Image (cartoon, rainbow, N blue to C red; front, side):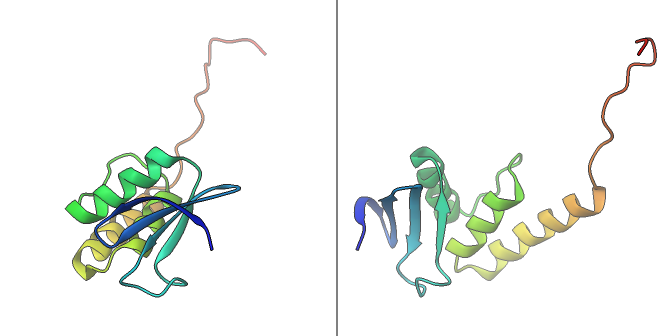
Length: 102
């Protein structure tokens, strides 16, 4: 299938052409895998899921990846709450310098 390059507990990282696939062997492949571009991000995702830690500053794609890898409903709900609160805040306006003449 793929070249497994890392394994920790039930998690495995496979190297593919576009980056890396992280897979939780306790879940079906369709539901328990995610694609990440960097090896360190893949290892960090595994560590976060094992320790049930939520990163403070990450994008929605990475948070969705953590949800796909985790089996813990409480952890998944906390991540979803964080994603919802970020969506409600919306994007910040771009900085506009009123002194700058255009």
